[in-house]
Amino acid sequence: MGLISGIVELIKQAISWIKKVFQYVINGIFNFLAHCVNWFKSLKLDKNRHVPFVANGNQFKEMLQKAPTKNVGIFEGVYDEATDEIVENRFIEADALDPKTREVLGDEDLVVLS
Image (tube, rainbow, N blue to C red; front, side):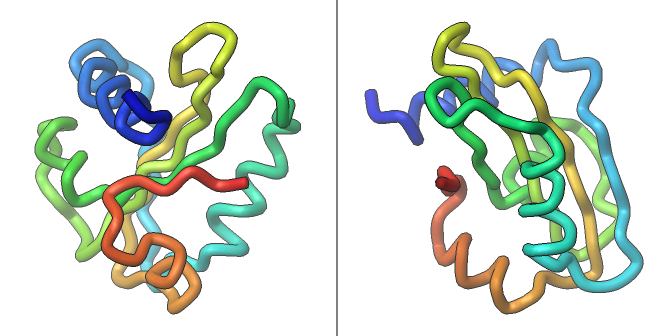
């Protein structure tokens, strides 16, 4: 199983027991640099251990059993390769995505960031 499919499976399994998914709502456009990159930078991640990722939140809305309040969603998280678990996460809903976020996600459900 590849890293991305492994993370997707972990998310699917974890959704049933994750009680602390931080959810944010942005009235406006989700900005990749301001809302995504800066959050990951604030976590002081270890490049040899942590794998930051973003996922299209629309697929995860159903798994989170939350009624959508905005048009788009982004699930951000950090996968710890040493412990094989997601150690940080948050779900953000917004009115729209900025061009950079659409470019990064493309048609993928999950993208590992480096």
